[in-house]
Image (cartoon, rainbow, N blue to C red):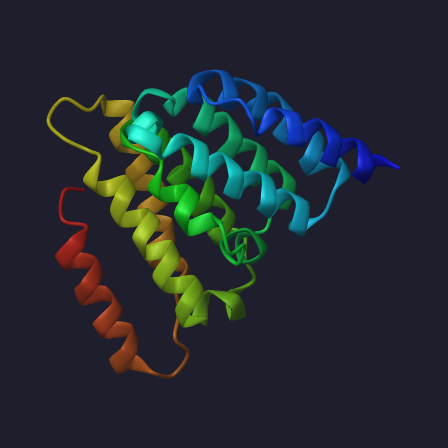
Length: 186
């Protein structure tokens, strides 16, 4: 009985053309959908959000609302593999910029660090987590606060330490070289 209600409400919401009005509704509604529905419904909603906020680059002025949506997704899935496996998630990440992306990167990197050791060897998961670490690193500049630097440094150094390739020392060395190359500001 919840799905027909969701479909009816969302049919009306999706007609809203102003991206700021639309995303303010979606921000509230995403929590309800995350709590009461599955991956399919969440994916449809996030996909609809993406299509509304990318018109005329409206996502650039809606970062706070998009951060709230991203936080709701992190809270729903609380599992790095499940979250980054959502088909709409890469497109959603592209809508985030600056501090919003940095905040979500911190959350996602923390989720990666909670994975069991065997899952950190998965090339797709490792590549995705490395992209988050690099994004977090690239947001640091000379104006970054010391606390911000410290938090990013701790997360990134834990990420580098947790990745293990078993007996494949060459692959581990290659990973460390990439870290040194792309994560040099710390």
